[in-house]
Length: 539
Image (cartoon, rainbow, N blue to C red; front, side, top):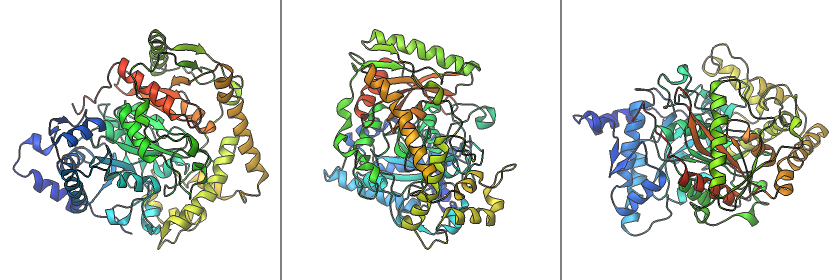
């Protein structure tokens, strides 16, 4: 399916505001909502009170995207928006349902962004490309909504736009942070001058993080293999959650690794995260990793929200081998983190220093590189080859792609569009394509066993030995690696801001399938620590 032209959408928005004031061209408020600050909870409550309609919200958020996505600050957080006529019709139907007291969920009528690796049905008028011209040109069409997208739509959420990302979620081997061929370079809205001035929003869910921070929507959804939700949440001053692998489905999401991938929300409050997880979490017969999570799922994660959540909470602090102090930003992270620990203890938590007994085994190189230098990379490359072929076979039709090799050959064909200057060749894809059959590979299963032992002898040991409820560390000090290896939930909360106003976060790492305790800690933090800031570039 070809790309849907943006021209008619931009023209429509121009007609909407033609002859209006400058503030109307770039709406800052609607129905009493400050769109830059408004959380999903704020939006949901305004809709329920009748202060605003979903159609008004769609119009306002699209106008904000038009003002600062390609134009204005050039944040490039969005790859493409839904066609105006389609998305307004959906919003109108949901408004009618609300008028008739048919409210599906707290997300009824709430506009959201979804990362461009989530399949969205063709009826919505948007492509699913993982930021790549390869899937746009040769990938045909998706067969329908991803499992979690179907759940969100059934709950009444409105898919406003597909958010930009690090191409292929950062696994192709192209070293271009927060960049994709289709979407361009994502910039943090917090930093004047954007990416070039140090405003790297993190990846790979760069667009979801930057888009929510910029007030393009109150809520977004991303995927996470190792840090892809946690890092953009940290750098967007957001409340984000990497759920346990298997707590939410990955069916219909362009994959990296079935051993580690997960899907989750990025919002402006713990409530945003809890409500989203309540809707997303579910048993998917097409995703076997969702089966062992089933006994632990909760119908309503908002019940864990409490301002007094630190009282009686046993918190473990992991420092080595993750802490760094080479830069002023890193030193500020450490000092801010230590101050937060003292406050948590004051609020009733028991805070313990809990060093990893196998700490030397955790400081291995990035798993997305082409060289199979560690067990994490070995596991991911076998998964990537198998999982990509499975996705292409089951989730796309009218496609000329059926394997990772086909993806590589298509990249060569679309070379002029696909590769940033100075980059070449999808090196990790090429390396992964050389591995043998996953099911019969001793190398793969030994690596998978080694990663499970790393978890059992590391965080699992800490939880048991110290009777911990939660582990904490600065989000950008490899908190996501603990989550990825152990398939654990990781929640980010805003911690501080550096000298260029780029945010950084604190991570709560929970036991496998215990999202409830993570949400408890996040909500206690939100209630007792300073409120998140908004970007001064847009304020």
